[in-house]
Length: 385
Image 1: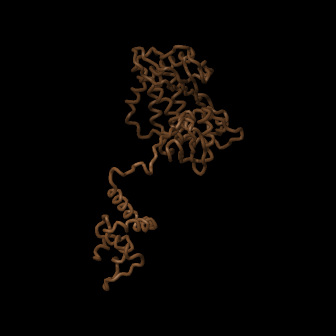
Image 2: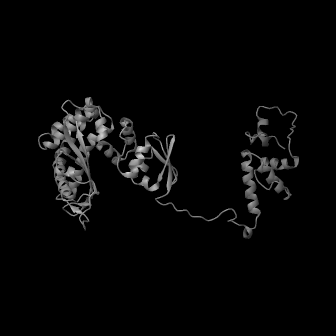
Image 3: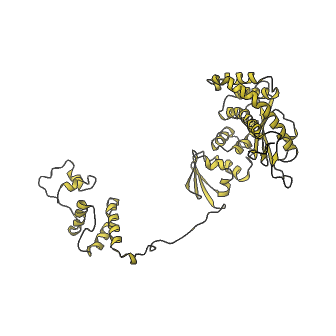
């Protein structure tokens, strides 16, 4: 055989003979079955089958290849293709090694959840309760969809998270002390309801070091969340989802005593606020900014004094709607965490002056919605600075 053929397969045993070797004698001894080696020689030369004119040798060749390692996989594949082509079309049985089957996955499917070095079992329905969990693709991914899930977090702390997913409430043992670690884990899962339940926990609040708060420890408002029927503007346009998040400076109103789950009056399909759909849109955006500037400081784990200052600024702005917009904008943009945003001073000031009165009106409508029992659920996060 031509030695040039060996150079085409440098990774094979035969090919290695051409790498840095002297084949001056042009002879090579290969231990094995000399009859079958002709197939390997033919493969090196043509990369095609048939390898022999005698069909009776094919069976021996198949047996020989079955005993080889993965190096022979290309040759095995070529042989299978050749044998399939030689088979008459009418005699091919495409279902010889295949059986039709359809499996169904229900909400009660048991899913194995691997978290760190721990694993848990729960129903698929539990994992679907809060879509934010499975949509967090940086931390959560399916190993086998609907059957096994991988979560890149601290395994032992997931038990508390799983308990919340199952019950919708946070139940922790009385002796639980690892609040900083649990808070970090809760933030990584990016489930707003879990964070809300944590912040409302009396045990968590009591665990916060008192010396980190301002010397004049006081309430500076609350962040209110209400679930309700769809809201339409006074012009007939539906402009918001079935959830409202709003800032409020009131801490003793009837809203705080509203039950967490209520039965709506029968026949209520949607509600209408005394604001146009554009005014509702701007009002909700304003509430989003006021609440998010506080929560973002919490999420970024800013020093308590900075978070307290942000909360105080928002509270002052809300209490005196017409007197403090400019001071609010100047003070916020002068804070270290907003450094470099001074160029948007005038734009932000105009936006605040325009949307703040609308946000106040939206809050009044939301108060009335809750008082009349139109809210499906009401929860709040009191801001103590």
